[in-house]
Length: 146
Image (cartoon, rainbow, N blue to C red; front, side, top):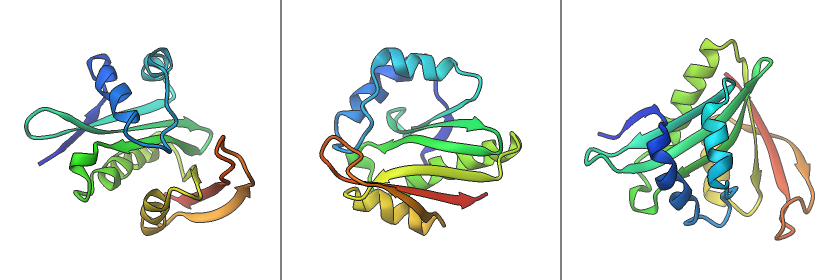
């Protein structure tokens, strides 16, 4: 069974590599990942497979009563195992303990698998940023109550 745990600095190389698989990943730099790991308002989680491979991660930031989902990614060889949903659920549990009552995110309208996952988890579209991304796709703004 995959375990969800706080990310460690030793995970950052694998997280950096994992982002290269996905067109819609935010493509954080290593210094940005290191800085995010150290932020006190960040929730940074890793999914570890039974053979101790990093197979996914979550980055979010807590502010006010919200948690902003910044990045969620799963290794392609571990898809369809509910890892992204488990990462999000774990992050939202931690966020609730920090006093958060809402989760927010933005997702490219072209990233259909992520959009469907967020809908399944109860997120609703609350806005749109037209031609927001470099490829001219629009960003869908979504949120849900925790």
